[in-house]
Length: 213
Image (cartoon, rainbow, N blue to C red; front, side, top):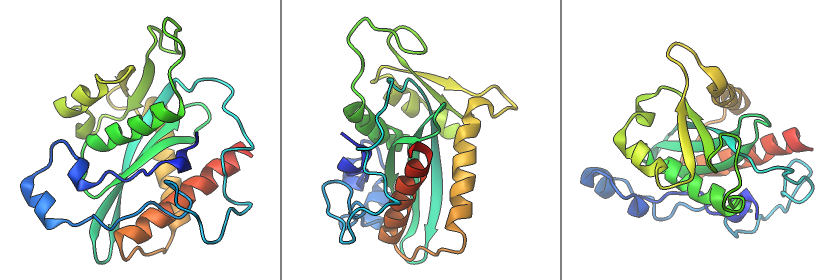
């Protein structure tokens, strides 16, 4: 399976914990995955700048990840958030999620997709951080210090790690990814959430394609 086979949108109705005023105020029911994602067919088809996941194979189980969440403004709908799980070595985007409410649950959605694409090795096998768990590195942003985040992580074979105070450490992969994304975005303006999802999804495809081709 590949990332584009999944719908990466975490709809408000699928959040486990969300303020009632957010749920009532924001309306994301009509938000859809980008063309070519989540079983949707792209009208333009697959171009040479889109990685379809068939020409490059993952040679080993990706067990050293880092997580980051970016925020993007839209002209009419407000903010939307992109959560990415990146391989700390290859720097590729292995999984992602979108949501219109910033919450650790965006990481849950991304992990759900990740473990469907990359099932864990047979029981007893060790990963890079040992004990059959994946290392998930984050910055020291307060969202990753919340009990809600740690509770979510505890549901998965994942060992949370955090950069040392005053350093970026391995999480520099995330900060570099998001800063480069903003440079690629340039003067592009998102009017709606759908605009943002479509553009950011295409950018992920192109980013991975360039790294893996």
